[in-house]
Image (cartoon, rainbow, N blue to C red; front, top):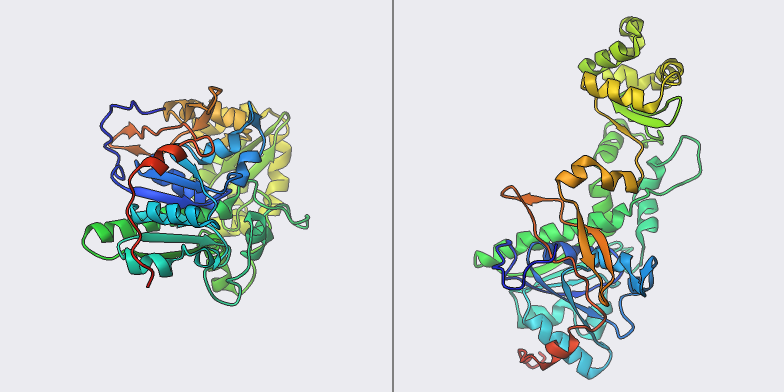
Length: 393
């Protein structure tokens, strides 16, 4: 939904100014989250634009991938290696509350845009760096993308079927986990600044963020001394808790406790399994889940997925069909949450996007869904009086 231009913006970051020196996913996602909550985000792009602008699908030449991560922002194209471009970038940042960048460590510093330059001139600035492995350390200088971080941080070791080839999670978890950590930490430091404290340099390593959201897997290793293993759609501590094949289609059930296990046995009409010592507790069922699946599979194969979904829903057992994104976006709950919002691309093409999924005070967060054309706001920003950088120390 595009906010009316004359509406009073009551979103919590409506008075916050952000400059974003980011490309592709993790940093732009951070900037978009801040913009969703009202921040005025100026995206500083190279003259050729964020590389994601070339990613398909293209609607009238405009990338819908780019649009999905850059709504509600302004765009200015600057050559940061040219003195005029560097000067403009510094001026914009000195007027801002937040700077977000996701270059390799050292790149911004070499350009003259590092925390070492800004920290002396504007100590209240919240300067956030997102990188593959962090700003220092043995691997700090390395680059990385989502798939390499998923590999390095262990995600690929637990993704896929047992014995299968390595596969990554279908959603870029490393990119978006680091973007979420960045946005959350920026908001936390902004609260410190508003309370009279200093800004500072936030260092978000994608590697660390991905391990951070792997708490169940790392704790399993700490507790057992063994690497967690691939289980396909199954769970290491609960069963039945996975995808099953029906006569037509697939479905998922999640019986995460003994009461739900009893309901599964009632629905499938296998009361004898309740007396089987192998399946007496969640841990035992997980330990013997291969045998359990072999016992349940023939029953599930006799009816359609729709049959089982209706039966398990009626019994209160959490369950779901194997949706594609077409089906997920059309779900009645997606409509209730107003997740799908109209989006107008530069040039007038109409498409859709997933808006902010959070409600504030019972209301959908009204975000500006329009993404910018490259350098769309450059002329106005260049014409605006900006703060003069102080002399270099």
